[in-house]
Image (tube, rainbow, N blue to C red; front, side, top):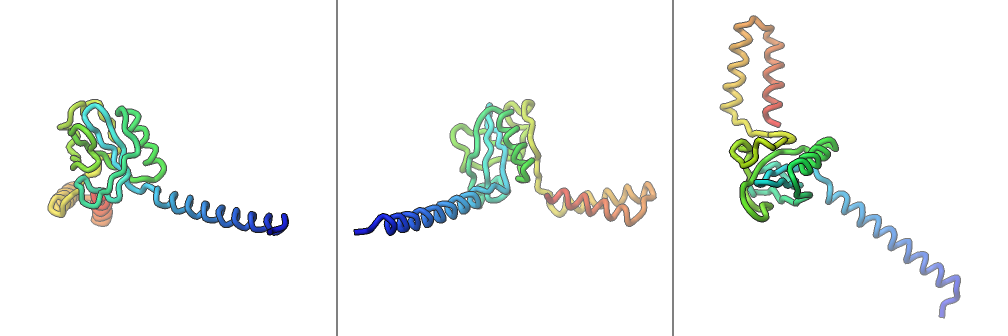
Length: 166
């Protein structure tokens, strides 16, 4: 049999070990629950905010996890809060009934019902190289027309190109 001192020491050791494991589990959970990319997704008369692994409106690699579903303003404000916390928030829509977690989404917000009520956080669009080349050529043409400094035009074009890739 144990005396009280030995029992107290063993109990203390078990509690310390349990506490350390609990802190490690909480730390791992916080890391696993960190959101880097999110989507505000409009769905007919309601909206959703999903945490995603990648910024993909298709299904490949998206691994969407719903954070909230509600009315437009509630979800828009929630998404704005995520953006303010440093999460990159995209906006999309899915005009399907039911659970849209594993359905394809679209960036064509104007074609959606109630789109006049949308207040998207951001709209990220993919720009192809040909579209970017056309935009850069237009910028350079306008720069020549207005006698802009070549270095300033180049910097402006590069900044514009970088922004369109985000």
